[in-house]
Length: 208
Image (cartoon, one colour):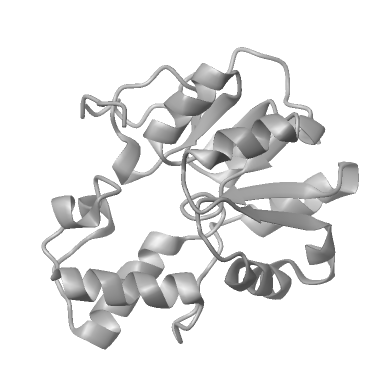
């Protein structure tokens, strides 16, 4: 894993210097980019395990045990619900995300999502609920590990990938795939990549 100096970049959107992105060369991460997974994590922890006092902004790293004061057993139980899709509290998409995906689909299909989850079935089921009839034009690839994302994207000739995990962004960049960082509290280290803080910002980078 690449060591990253944890410094805040001030929340500024780094400039995107290229022309607008061809949607045929673009793919997306799922958790933390399209799906608001960490808010769901906190809601489940609060409502079902009576965990209080942890804010979204407190999740400053991917290793949850290292950055939040929560029992390991609770962390594991909540994540298990999310990964299995067995949670009762609904998972929500990021604001504006379904609308932007629908606009991209008018220009290009299918749209590729690559997730480090092991089982794609809960994601596919949820996408049908969120995207509706257009969900058949969404392709979900579950790699099981962060490292295999690079392999999948190169095989699909993807040039740009929207990702929230900085370690993955550095690996993508080294392999020739241009990362776009989706701004989250856990990726506030210094980095050289363009970033967006919303799907409205992301839409401005795409040729749609």
